[in-house]
Amino acid sequence: MNGILKEEFHIYKHLPPTSQTPRLWGAIGKWFDGPEGAKIAISTAALLQTSAPEGVEYSVQRYEYGIHRKNRPSKTMIWRNGRLIDV
Image (cartoon, rainbow, N blue to C red; front, side, top):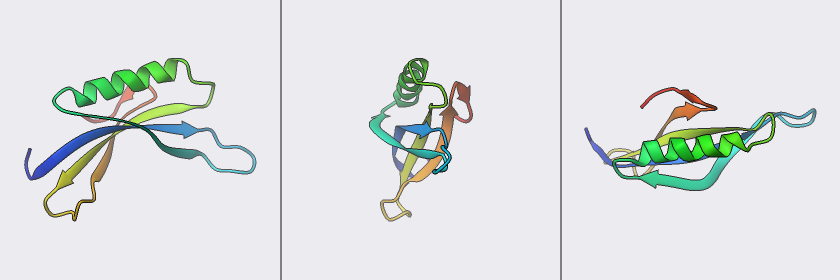
């Protein structure tokens, strides 16, 4: 894992902008880990995307916890709205 102590995959929800607010986004509280964590998170986000109202998008971010980051994860988006970005 190259200095990575723990790896998690978190699902985020992106709300469309309105006339009074910019695009809002945040974690929905679902995350997965383990060898199949990325696949499970992406399939769950894709399922949520199918029933989402127009303008709402879902994404998956990889959290990598390392020994030199003082327990703060490095975050990388790997999937958004049906597009695989990085795995």
